[in-house]
Length: 248
Image (cartoon, rainbow, N blue to C red):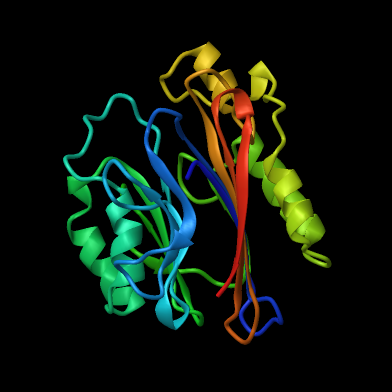
């Protein structure tokens, strides 16, 4: 994922609401949101190149999602970051134990932010900090830097989520994720990829010939543990490829 905004409200009728975009090269083979035949109870999209995923749910209230940290000066890690999400969803380790275990080997991966939850708690790990922490109630955002780093698209989408919490309809949340307006050049972060690329990557929804938003996902969890997941898939220049909705 390259943008995740989420509301974590323990004790609320809808304790977890997530809206997220996965940005990736269109050529990377991907399976849309579905039940995993080799992992009972896991529902997620799948990276068919490395076998992992970017966001999903699993048995026992498990939830996990990941964004990459953008740092072109760092050499790529030898392992795929998508296995961190898949490992939690299909495993049986407790949330805190899993985060501690990932933190101990975080140098094997390129930079990442990892969210994991168990239905009662939500934890966060930034690979650069290597110190997991539990998140308190609030509305948060993750892009390709640390938690709540104030990049324009994060601020815009997080604010939009805050405005929809009274009536978090999936189609309205998906509309937040479809915003293709780039940030003003004066607001762009400097992450070492050059002005043209910074501008391309500054929009909530990215569309180009080779790289862009491959999936927009909304997850709504109620206080009975029921999860509603809607995923829209896209191809080059933002062409719509399909939509999947699951209730699990």
